[in-house]
Length: 145
Ligand code: RB5
Image (cartoon, rainbow, N blue to C red; front, side, top):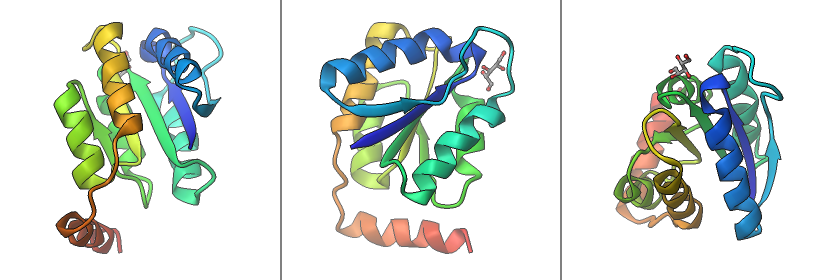
């Protein structure tokens, strides 16, 4: 699995934490920045991750900002993206199983690093359940037309 990850300035520390986690898990990733702590606009950093996941260059994406909200809204504007904003482990497991979410959003100012790592681990390991959920994903795709 290849993961694209980015944040805005509000998510830099948590992005570093999740990169550490992916190193520990042996997951291949590419970091789309930002490279320093200066203030940036979250759509500029959600876009490269979301587009590469939508294009199939990466299997999954992780986007982080202060709340996770801006990044999740931006990622979900890209056709083919099902970005889930998760701040608990139950939702992270459920959104992989039910929504086949391909991008995870989190907010550094909402969750601590320990919980964020568990959320990301659960989401990265989670598998889509298919079945009745497949039909619902197809209906999401229809909404994009
Ligand atoms: C930046 O201050 C903050 O607005 C951003 O990180 C994010 O929370 C937006 O949704």
